[in-house]
Image (cartoon, rainbow, N blue to C red; front, side, top):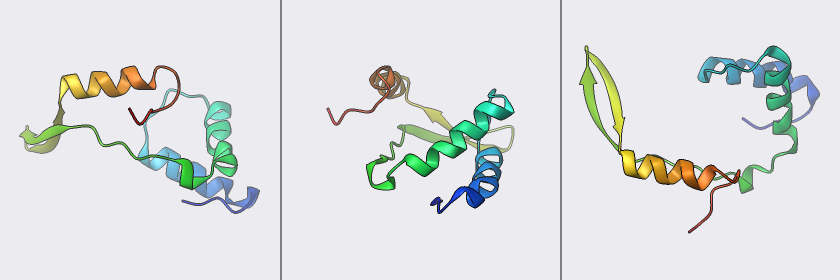
Length: 84
């Protein structure tokens, strides 16, 4: 999703609420969606957590590798992912 102007905010909110779970209140969710107007997409990294695919009760799920997941979250503790 790329933000063009403030008129795109309802669409950004729809994407945010359709594809995420959050405990943010409505004002916080709007602030998060509005932040998209200030983020350069070229500076956003995609990090895929390691895991294995299996099924549970008929649903396809990914069981995350605990060590890798812990390392990624530890790296996020300062608010950014480092290349190291």
